[in-house]
Image 1 (cartoon, rainbow, N blue to C red):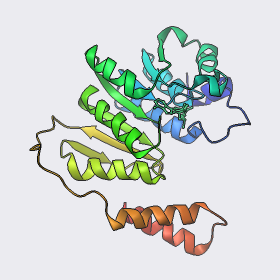
Image 2 (cartoon, helix red, strand yellow; image 1 turned 45 degrees about the vertical axis):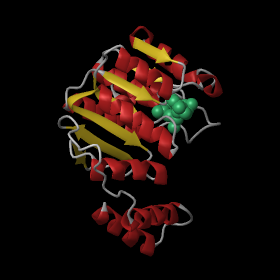
Image 3 (cartoon, rainbow, N blue to C red; image 1 turned 30 degrees about the vertical axis):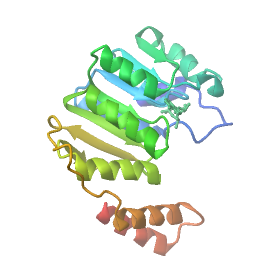
Length: 230
Ligand SMILES: C[S@@+](CC[C@H](N)C(=O)[O-])C[C@H]1O[C@@H](n2cnc3c(N)ncnc32)[C@H](O)[C@@H]1O
């Protein structure tokens, strides 16, 4: 099933146009999974299942989705998966990721693709990444959604500066951050590299300024500078 076919079947309600990932992001994830031949997947943050539906269509394999608040979304994520005929391949965990991810570690599960789009607090994303690192196979990929947010950018920066066993992959989509695990973490437990930088703070300020109000020539130039800096 292609992204176009999926988007004709799933329903994203008009009363919430912000929670689900965008169709172009979903199509990119679908393509990425296919190109890299990935098949063992888990995600935090299910909502309307736009990400889950594209991940599952790309792998045609089992998928684990974690989200404690499906009822807030009128169970539409689960009904979208049902409409697609994917229900028997979905393990849905209606709980917080900080409870489920350690459970998966204990079950000795491993994955080659992990999508993080659950809690968007800095500590929530960092905890998801911490467990993602334990669950990710060598050469596996982790994607963070919503890199326009300061919290996500800080986690992104933390991985870039402190975890030398990860390779940053520049995404053509500004709101997605991609890392590939290259090996085990061999840091000295006392080691630490500062990851709060004025550059990342400046880039964040640029993004929020550009996102608000009309697009002007100055904003377009600023966007180009931001892309060079990233
Ligand atoms: C931005 S939405 C996810 C959108 C989804 N990926 C899609 O494409 O439809 C964020 C989701 O994270 C969930 N969430 C919030 N805190 C969470 C946590 N601690 N663990 C897992 N999910 C969480 C929310 O209930 C919400 O459904």
